[in-house]
Amino acid sequence: MSVKLGVPSKGRLMEKTFDWFAERGVTLTRTGSDREYAGAVEGVEGVELVLLSAGEIPRELAAGRIHLGVTGSDLVRDKLGLWEEKLRELEPMGFGHADLVIAVPKAWVDVSTLDDLDAVAAAFRRHHGFRLRIATKYHRLIRDYLRDNGVADYQLVDSQGATEGTVKNETAEAIADITSTGETLRANHLKILGGGPVHRSQATLFKSRKAAWSAPDRKVLADLMTRLGIET
Image: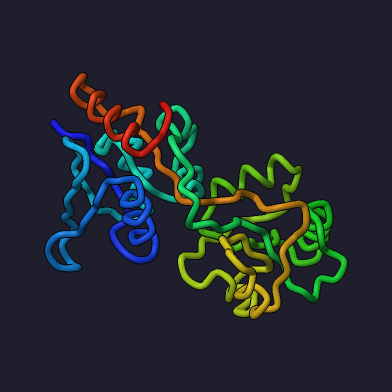
């Protein structure tokens, strides 16, 4: 048996993950072509590299099919209900930073807080006969956040493409999305509601609570954590 480590299979998240491990004496390499999701691990015995999309990693961890995984903290919280029963957060990795925010049109000069959004949503429903639409990929996080803050008169609409464009395209009145700089929001004449982000995300190393952890696996984990300088 080996400890399976899931990491993002492409892009900057993969590159930054490889760099992070290399800086701690563990070399991750992709083998074969870009179309092959195979890899190798050097620097610690008994670890198998599994290349997956960042969005798949929370599900694979929760199912126990991989032991460890690197993915955005936003994806874990959005894709998994009661995520802390299924995963343990081992180490924030210091890259992949982005904030999940709610944004509304700049033209809504009187709307700058969640309380303002709640009032506008109630008025919108009275005037239009349907609920104000918020486009997002992050249904669980946004639904829980709005519920906890007392906002009720809205509906979430799924957006898997360019979320910022949904307001201009009149398929939503507001959006909730990840942003690093806010430039795309400003370019689409949107402003972020005050009060702080819904979630501050970054790449994080997670451990599965559902994987079968044999005694040899636990020894491999201990060796890996020692090499990475992570206290468990």
